[in-house]
Image 1 (cartoon, one colour):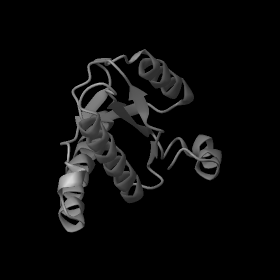
Image 2 (cartoon, one colour):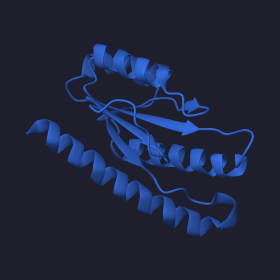
Image 3 (cartoon, one colour):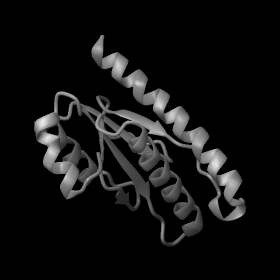
Image 4 (cartoon, one colour):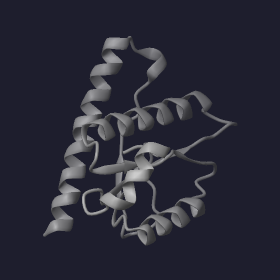
Length: 146
């Protein structure tokens, strides 16, 4: 499910099936390595969106959280809100190692240099990242069910 009116109207009534939230997080550095930050963010967003399409109706993809200087207080606050709402399985999707809360699952994607690759190669690399992320989600579900 996406964070939009149509999907969110169905969310509360289907929490028994939709127990997972994916929170994309991107750290943006406007002073140094701006293009690298852009590649990282684009990779995270594409992997999140493509995984959501595969698991439609089983997870909620939240809007991307942008940080600067690795400040994550607003992400912690949102995680707490999601837990209170009833989403118990939360996965942070990022291109960097993030250390917020030990109870949250983290998945780190490999950054794909978007400007340096042709479209076919980008698609292949993104698909590989999505497959790995989907395996991670399934492992997370299996852990929470055992």
